[in-house]
Length: 316
Image (cartoon, rainbow, N blue to C red; front, side, top):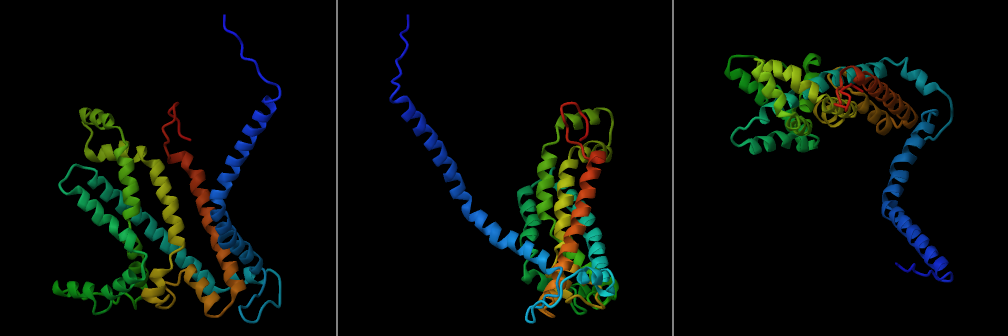
């Protein structure tokens, strides 16, 4: 018969207090490790956002200060043709680049998912532009490629084709800027490639036995199984498209005829060229609301086309 251990009533409370103190110390230690991030977030994220929200209701000038408060900035945004045009160009840019970039990324990922020679080298080569694409040097190189006497028109001239004025023609300038963003499909491609490898192979085997073609398998099996990743890439690429700045700033400076003046570039010009900090803050918040609305629409629509593969087989 086992003998129960005797508990000393004098030492039991001390042990309990020691355990509680140890738990509290471990909890405080966690806060200590994330303290740098919290400080950075409060100083460099939250405070600037709240400040811009306050300034958006003022005529704050960087050197003259504030002389008026009200809704005048937001009223001007919806009545100024230049600002409305910039929002329209930004929407057009986003709806051009996002679908093309996703299609290019999925197409290349689908090809690289097959067992081909030097596949790792191809994956690296296609991923590198997504690393370098946001740099100023690449934007300068892109500008030199599409000059009137640049490499693109020189290649076209070899085949007897007179290339257009890519950067001085309003009909082509936005296309050049969009093409730079589409060229940077490497990050989306890697995510698509990981999703393609997670598709069960037995589904393809069953479809092959039933006589389904490769295209039919892609439409009926591949696309539905990777819709969560398609949705993720859609949201991230949409947000990135609305934040585009380097391309129009370096390559065209918003021209010709403001055909490439995206709202991010206009915000920059109003803030650091004419020093209208209040107006630029208001435009930034309107841009934030537009992106939030588009993201919300995408989230609400996912129940109709995104398949998450739950236990009951239903879509969320």
